[in-house]
Length: 301
Ligand SMILES: Nc1ncnc2c1ncn2[C@@H]1O[C@H](COP(=O)(O)OP(=O)(O)O)[C@@H](O)[C@H]1O
Ligand SMILES: [Mg+2]
Image 1 (cartoon, rainbow, N blue to C red):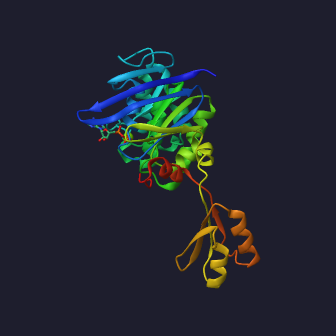
Image 2 (cartoon, helix red, strand yellow; image 1 turned 180 degrees about the vertical axis):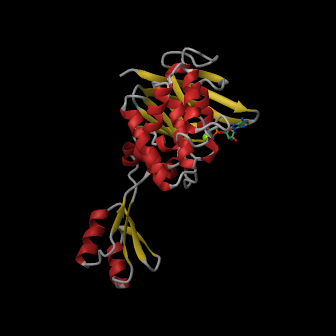
Image 3 (spheres, rainbow, N blue to C red; image 1 turned 45 degrees about the horizontal axis):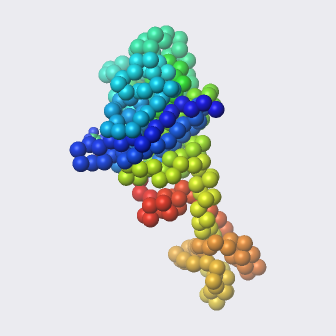
């Protein structure tokens, strides 16, 4: 497996603000790599340094075996960049936009049309970019990042401000791009997105990477509690106390009772014996619990 990106002890400050505080990671060729963290964590700055859009104060970056800074024109055709908050050429249609982008890389209009098809915008080809919905504009900006067939694709919060359906469509597209063998690096502040899409996730906070692992390994490594929820009103208080005794914390919000436990077998068995499994839901640890464990505070995007 060859390595697409090597980042070693990169640092960047803006005046007094330390945006990136000694970050190191590697991304393998063909990997779907996520940088997850709340706003201000340093995700965009990290990405811009890897893309060669920004100079690091310290540390080293290698992208496809080359240094992206100072601006390395040999890298440009091999990487696709979708910036946070996309700017389009004004007054162009979706197709003209994409054809214009493509022409910068010597790509013909046929490829632009194929790309419109890939991102599901063929029927919007003649629509001016300012008339596109949020989701359509995001897909067009991804098409612009992909039109020249880059090996590595960088996406900075590509699903921010999209409705749930548009997010799901975009996830499908990103899986397709990665399935074609492209290395994908994505930043997100959505836990669920990182968990669903990424082969490995770097959890970032206050300019530092706290942990890097596959999402499932991050969660498994936690030894976190399981939350078991059933409908309220079926259990007598004495039975509730007996079930929870020593194995679970309980919380009754009037509609549901939630047992938080590290011994789900005992709780589930007791609930089943009392025949009170109505409305049963079981939730294991998520990346939110990982963040809480790593930082000591709740995750707030
Ligand atoms: N151009 C800039 N000038 C000054 N401070 C900046 C600039 N860009 C980002 N910052 C600051 O650097 C920190 C990291 O920002 P950023 O890399 O944008 O994080 P994220 O993408 O995770 O939200 C934040 O405190 C932010 O306010
Ligand atoms: Mg950002």
